Length: 479
Ligand code: SAJ
Image 1 (tube, rainbow, N blue to C red):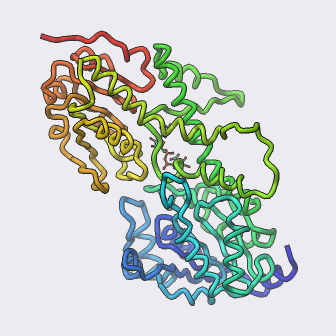
Image 2 (image 1 turned 135 degrees about the vertical axis):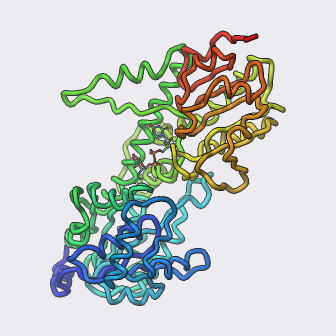
Image 3 (image 1 turned 30 degrees about the vertical axis):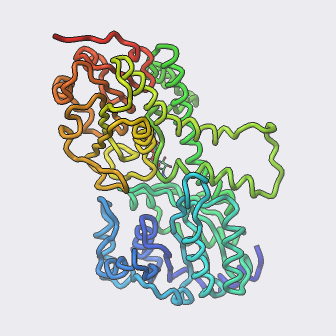
C-alpha cells in the first residue's frame, strides 16, 4: 500500500458516484442495488451501443429490465432508482472520468469449448474503455470470473497503458467475483458473503467501502485479488469434483450390480460432530457456464503462476480428471442406450429415440453447454432418428425442440431422460408404452426420475445411471 494512493482516496472522500460496465445478468442487479443504497448519489450503467445489445440502453432508462425470466424485485427496484434519478444507462464511456468507483461485469465465455481457451475480448475492450477515461483516485473492480492472475496482471497492464497512471499508487484495483444465479440475482448479491480482494490493502479497503452498503445478510470476506480469483474458480471446481466423485461411484455401482442411491443414502447418513461427506447426485452429465469452464480457469492460473508447483510428475490434475468423468456421463447414457436396444435385438441405426430434456438444469430454460448435446450427437452419428422434448427451452441452434411430449414419444424405440424437469416425474408407464406402440420400449433414466419397477413391470427395458441393481432385469412380455 502506498501513501500516495491512500492520500488520493482520502482527498476524494467517500464513494458517491459509481459506474457499472456491462448491463447483463450481473451488472444490472449490481447497478440497481448500488443506486438504491443511501450512501451513493448516482450510478451510471455503461453499455456499448452495439447492434446486438444497444437496445438495452433505452429500455433500462425507461425502467424496464432486458433480462429474460423472472427476477423477483428487479424491475420494481429498477423503476424506483430510475425515477429517483439515481440510475442512468449510457454508452458515453467518457463519463467514467466523473465517477469514484467502477465495476466491470462482462462475460468471459469459451471462444471454442474444444480448446477451453476463454474469450477475454469483450472484457479486454471494457477494461480498455475504463482505462481511457481513468482518473487518479478511482477504484476499478473486476466482477467477471477470470483466470487467477488476471486482475494483478493483464487488467492492471491494460489500465496502466491506457491511462498512463499506476495501479496501487494513482488508482485502486480489486476483484470481487459475482456469485449470482439466474432467478435470484438480487437475493444472491444481498445475502451471499462477498469475496473482496485488492491488489493492495488500500484497494481492498476501498472495495469494502463500495460493497458493504449492498449486503444484507452477506458478510465481506477480504483477501488479495489473486486469492479472490482462485476462490471463485475453485468454489466451482470443487462442486464439479464432488459431482464427478458421485458419478464415478454410480458407474462402479452399475458394474457391481448395486443401487448407487442406497449407497448415497448410507454415506450421507454419516454426519454431525463436524463430519460430513457432502455427497451430491449422479446424473447424465454436467452442463452450464460455470462448472464446465471454471476448472480450466483455475488450471490456467496455476500454469501462468510465478511460483514453482510441486505435484506428482506427469499426473493429471484431479480437477481435470473430474471434468473428464463428468463429460463422460452423456457418453455413458449412450452406452446404456445401445445395451438396452441390443437386449431387444435392435441397434441405434434406424432406431427412433426421444430425448426428454435439453436444458442443462432442472425446470430451467438455460441450455448453455447442455449434456444432451453430446448424447444427441452420438445417436445421430450411429444413424438413430432423434427427437428432442423440453418444456422450457424455446430454441437452440441446429436443434428442433418440441413442446408436445406425446408427439415426441409416438412410435419411438427408446425414451431417454436427460434433464430432471418436474414434468418427467409424472410419466405414466402404461400411457407411455401405448404411445410408443412397442412391446418392449426402452427407457434410460439419466436423472433418477422414474421408479424402475413401474416401467419394468409394463414391459419396458430399463437402464438407469447408478442402478446396477436393475439394469440387468428380466424383460417382461405382456399379452
Ligand atoms: N449437477 C449434477 N449433480 C449435482 C448437482 C448438479 O449432475 O448434484 C449438474 C446439473 O445437472 C447441471 C450442472 O451439474 O448440469 C451444474 O449444476 P449447478 O447446480 O452447479 O448449477 P450452475 O452451473 O448454475 O452453478 C451455479 C454456480 N453459481 C455461481 O457460479 C454463482 C455454483 O457455484 C452454485 O453452487 C450452483 O449454481 C448452485 O448451487 O445453484
